Image (cartoon, rainbow, N blue to C red; front, top):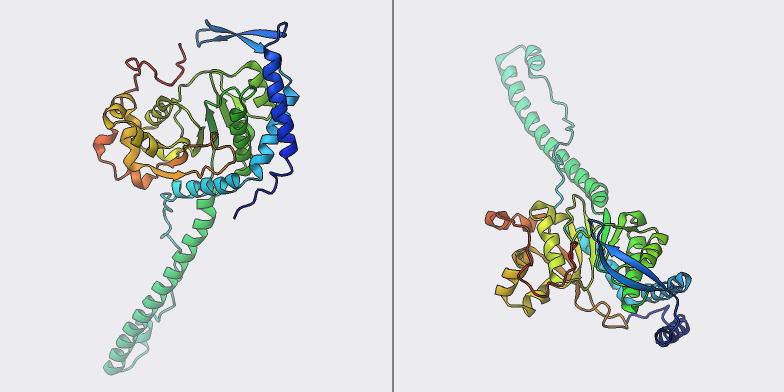
Length: 363
């Protein structure tokens, strides 16, 4: 039975935090609350919406994030998840093939020079004996060399497996989409806290963790930068192509966002994706095949070639990380797909969908 070591030590902090949450809700009903007006703009610089951003105590928000992170770090959920992600990284890079592993150097066993040996003989009988003995020595030497070569090859492969594959099997960067307003939403704070744990545990430079959500306030962007994370300026709509192993952190995002990401990397580049988000298997089970084909065809098309590792939802708040899985697309699986799979990869279009579960950059 797994035991949350830090859970009891943070109980009082958590109770205090929740009390403060309720106080904030009550205060919002009062008049005269000091507020800031800010304006979101699209890529053309035109205003989208005018929003009211309450004055935020940044230190208090970061203190609450510390409480969330401590609870997660001491939980079975985090212990299991970090092992699951490490396994996903290894599985995703298992198709990395060590080239030229057989180009080992050869150490040949010395064999007699037959010309010198024959020249030193006096009779035809002696010469025949020398030739026969040379053949025996040559066969024996070849056998020894084959055995030695096998040992060398095996040793070199093992060395490369440890060093080169371990170097290759690393997350290059993290992209976080759809985190939400973590200043006001406790679920989003836990999700941000988990992201910070992943960045630290897998030794990703914080600046290589890119975050974007159209609903982020200026205060939330400021807090993210205080943690060293990078905030994307433009709404990519999930259409980011990557050339190195990238961890996409997308809990509870809409289906079109996953669909756009798959389309942007359609082909061999899919092997560079590691997606932490809604279970693709559950999406397949919950929605009719025809609907998936019409609305999110890239999710449907990639399902047979996806390796999914389900995240055990055993955190004490079950609605925060429910229905989450880690998805990888090993090159070995992608190579089994029919060639027609990769043809006619048209950019997704959601104009016929009334509720597309995505915020477009021009909306």
